[in-house]
Length: 255
Ligand SMILES: [Zn+2]
Image (tube, rainbow, N blue to C red; front, side, top):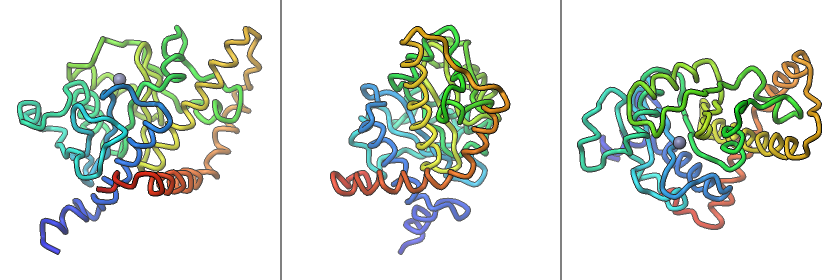
């Protein structure tokens, strides 16, 4: 293996960039599978350097259903000049993901999209997930809410504002917009997105009945949220199953 190939395989500082690329590509394919994608928009990113400043992002104009590991672009959060280059990222993705990776180096994987139920909830005056079942309570006290949407992000300050709101949380309901999640690994972030959309669906269905919600007490909601800590293994197992499904149907995401 050449030095360059070694560097690609192992990334920077022991991070296995090749595996990270494969997992992130799988996340795009799976988001399309679950119908969380939207045309050729929306963006997922993953930090590939120890300091969190270099990250992988989907290229502008790609469809989630065909993204491959090798086509993910590698960017540096401090290098604004990428916007003038041939393979420039989408400017709104740069503003949001660039700012998040620049400001929150511990945010290793950031998934942002407009899934149907999460986005429907974000269209309400109060997009909070109320603790009404185990999935909604999972996010209790861990969910950021942003109600200051400023239009399609094209300014650094929009990204900086979102980064400030996201800090210390695992997910964010972005009012009038969509959702974002943060995880240590692609599997963990994907699982959060999966459960955020499940929880949002439950909220929308519960609201649609017009009946009063049976909201948990703060103590029960917090206990339920903490109870999920023992089930973190589910993220890895679930993602492995989903990747196996892709491998059976279309393994080209690994290319
Ligand atoms: Zn968006």
